[in-house]
Length: 123
Image: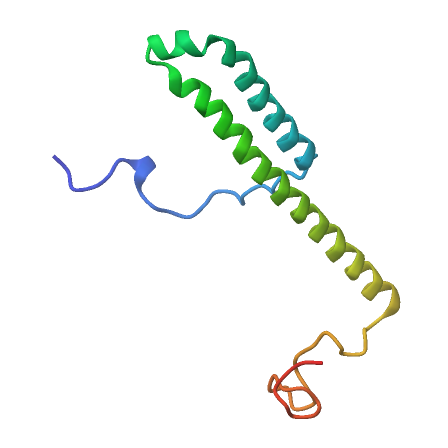
């Protein structure tokens, strides 16, 4: 028996960089999945007794949990999408107008994180 791991488990340099993350219609995807979970919950409700008799009642509640977590997911991705758009608009405005006059910076003239009045707070 050897004290070395097989070749595929040995750490080593990466042979290639990781791909860029895919950006797609995230809100629509999460919304579609949430609707699917809720529809599955509604379809299983008439068969509640059968699921209970056969020990598969957790299927019904899994669909309801998927729909509930999907609602949280919709809220999250909508906020994320809005933040990405706000950031892109702010970057575009900054690039088009030059600098913003230093209003967004917390560094004052001394560069020590204090505002220009020396109070230690920005803006």
